[in-house]
Image (cartoon, rainbow, N blue to C red; front, side, top):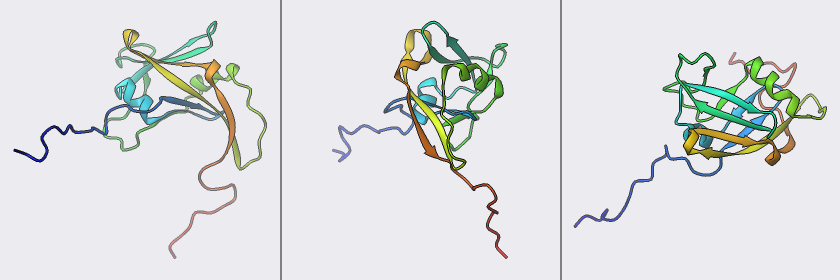
Length: 148
């Protein structure tokens, strides 16, 4: 009798927690759970429902005329960041970000709901939580460290 009898493997590729969409003036990021719920597709469609103020992401084929490159196979980062100008322009009217200091960034976070029947992840603007975070990376005027 094996000491592993009755145990089940817990896969790191299983979606757990909440799917979160983070929106700033410069990028849109879907967290690891959102990427896993979508099935790590190489291409997605981005949809907006102006009347219900919802955003949706749906896996699609590269041949789809509205396909947006999404997940890169073999990529080690679990989240996906979209910084295409047309995506940012489409989302801008739905957010009113405050002016912030140079070392800060205003953001909104929305929790997503997986709609299995439509194979899409939907984010409702009504659930948005806005805030301000410190910018990541080097600060303006700061030089990269050199190994001289």
